[in-house]
Length: 246
Ligand code: 3SL
Image (cartoon, rainbow, N blue to C red):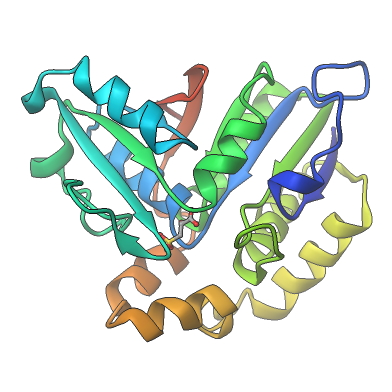
């Protein structure tokens, strides 16, 4: 297995379905979309359906009975007007999400998901399900894995690279090889911060943005908690993620 990392959707090379494309894509948005997805599916959501475009989300929402779906999303870190939930992993409680379809749109994470939706195997990963995703990849042995960060509006984000490094560490320990410099750098970042990932999340520019918006202590703790969940969110049809476990 070879593993590459791309910081943001815009850096993902063309030809994703061509002979040089990946056999599996892993989307990462530590703060906070893929952490929220992992917790929502762990807590019993029927599925998370991701939308880059809000009009498409609203059109899909009209085809669901109100009691069977939740609108989840943010722009700029704040809950969208008229939505049921923002993008906090501590808000997707079992009593709120159990059995429901979460229609979700976020500033960056759902764009990365959109970018790789044609890949035959798409997983999402955050620090709480790092080991579960690693175990799935080690079991399935895709030849080339592309990890794709979400960043912020096209720019690099520290926390997504940190998590890419955390996943790469587990894969390399099982014989995977590193295929690009971004992945090497992510591994180095993880080795620097693995003793205190929450501190890294807090100094990251998006961490600072969230702190500026108000008290996000519970989100930081939740997003930094390593290997807590066994859920592996997997795309089952374009944009739709369901829980599988390892
Ligand atoms: O950018 C995103 O997709 C979000 O995860 C950002 S936020 O943490 O919800 O503000």
